[in-house]
Image 1 (cartoon, helix red, strand yellow):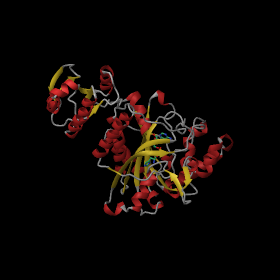
Image 2 (cartoon, helix red, strand yellow; image 1 turned 90 degrees about the horizontal axis):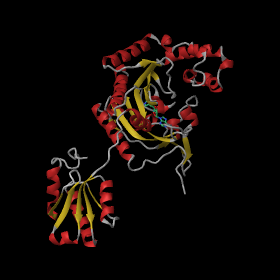
Image 3 (tube, helix red, strand yellow; image 1 turned 30 degrees about the vertical axis):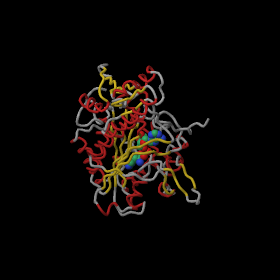
Image 4 (cartoon, rainbow, N blue to C red; image 1 turned 60 degrees about the horizontal axis):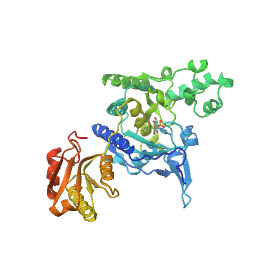
Length: 433
Ligand code: HAM
């Protein structure tokens, strides 16, 4: 038997409804904020993600699925959405049509990480990218969208952690100070931190191994090294969050694992014990050079991405369950071959009129067929045998009240519509299920 690759999972019927409900909540929130969906390929040219020799992020250096296609072109399965979206933004010159682009995407990403709860090798992200403005207010627009989504799926106890990495000059100054500070403690650094000190000293700050050491706690804080402009920008972000009533916590050590960020960075963290270490459900920040790096004009952006698996887990433990059982309006139970053929015809007619219908193709006994109708969450069950067929009638059972009536075969639609919400039979079941 073949089994699924390590770090992947199957979404089975019963579970898939939760995904659909989450995705529909996502789309509703994006509509509220006037973001438009963009769909980009699942694989991109290797260079879209491997842009620079100096990139220090684990994601780019250790976790991408890289391969050569049959024509020996180097390709990479997308480990995140941002770079591909920016590639599409540049290639399609989206910026030429509108000064501000508000884009969102939902889909699978791939990272060769050590699988654990909430961390998979194939996982799904919902992300947004807002391009074309360097106003601090658009950073807030993105964070606000994230918070609205969290509320929409009923999550409580979500913390917005935020920091500013400043502009490139502030960061350069701060990096120099950090290198000086940590170089005095070289022997006490873990191996990863020694490497980070060379490649990207900011990344030392979120080292899980060293973070509790005293010289880490006392390390210089970036806020003290932001130049006036960067400081003012960050203050405007925080004031705007205040004005929207969005609670946050400034986290001076928050630097994020990807190299493209400048100014605002943030993470949304849930406080759910079952989550363990993977308690960040969404994260993002501003990037000022990515569009240029990918061959476009000098346009800045800000974005954020959520892990769908983590959102679903969080909703299970601390929000709306997002579970909803699908229903069918009419389920046909038939006895005999002629009745089965008529049943097939009847459900085709009813489907044409907009009712969700199904019939039993496998059950032989009445008892088994009733059980299948129940499993299908049927609002009405039609029972059709040879006798009924001869008289042009059908027995219809209202599964809410258990009442059963005999009606004419051509009256099913009318009968059902009289009992459920008339305007839109597919959208509502009038509180019956
Ligand atoms: P990221 O922090 O790498 O950022 O990922 C965002 C979210 O994706 C994480 O907070 C987490 O919920 C989820 N995630 C990441 N890796 C995994 C995994 N292996 N298994 C399950 N979930 C995972 C980005 O990807 C940036 N592109 C976000 C962004 C958009 N920044 C600007 N624009």
